[in-house]
Structures are given as C-alpha cells and as structure tokens.
Image (tube, rainbow, N blue to C red; front, side, top):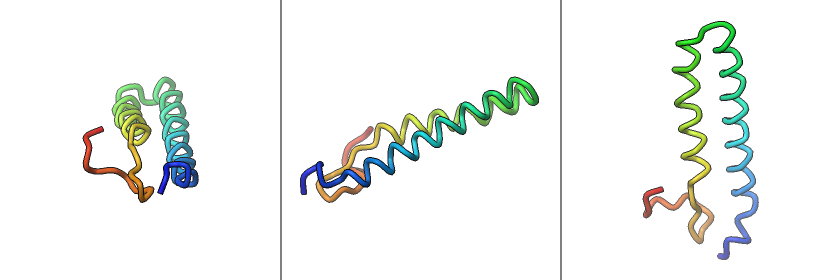
Amino acid sequence: MELRNCVPQKMMQYLFVGFLVAAAVAMTIVSLTILPIVGFAVVIPIVILAVYVFRLRLNNQCEIDVSKDV
C-alpha cells in the first residue's frame, strides 16, 4: 500500500494532535488564572504527548511504525 491510501489515518492523527494542542492551550489559560503550579504540571505532559503523536510515522499497512524510534 502506498502512503496515499493512509489519508484517513493521517487525518485522525492530525485531529488528535489538534485536540491535544487545544487542550494544552485551554489548560494554560486556566493555569494562568486559577492554579499556576498544578496547571503547568498538567500542560507540560500534554504538549509532550502532542509532539510525540505528531512525529509518529505510518508503515505500508497504515499502522504506526514501531520499528523506528521517533
């Protein structure tokens, strides 16, 4: 299979990353106003997860490629 056939999987990956980024932005706003220390402790892992998911690559079967380090 060519990577062109993986469009739905890539779109879901980008939507998930967009959701994570939106959650991180929302938590940043909340952490600036309500709980500064606790809020940033939650935001940092969300941003790290968003970067990790964004960098995931798909193999020829449109699955996450675990043979390579990201």
